[in-house]
Image (cartoon, rainbow, N blue to C red):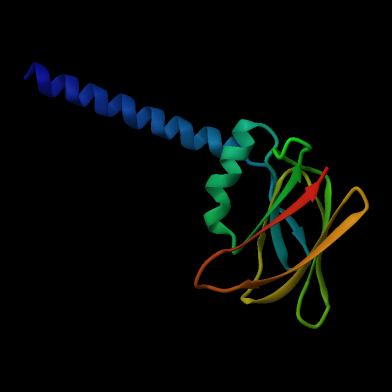
Amino acid sequence: MKHQNLLRLCTAIGLALMASAVVSAESALPPTQQSGSVTYLSGGIGLEQSLAIKSEMRNYPLVLTFVGRTANNGNEYLSDIPVTIADRRGRLLLDASSDGPFLLASLPNGRYTVTASYQGVTQKHVVNVSSRGHARQTFVWSR
């Protein structure tokens, strides 16, 4: 009987901690934003917000990450990165600045050109968004 009560107590504490972690992750998320028909989320500054955004990635078809390579071959996350996303026809769907190292975007299936700039250096990548999996693109700049 003692063993069952202890097991119940441990289970209750575990569930409470999990619920607290979920609430904490949700409160750490930056607000979603809208640009035309594109809903997006950007940020990832600080551990809590970074973890919250990483847990949200599965809900967005496109995940962008912005990284600077340091002199000693290390990497650091970047923020305030101007980003544009255009469809196949060149129609601009998103023109925003990432508030952190991650930008998550809800886009329909299709082929897109993503452009991002850091310290005057612009990079373009073509990404394919499909229902079969999330498209991920990392932009890396040497610092």
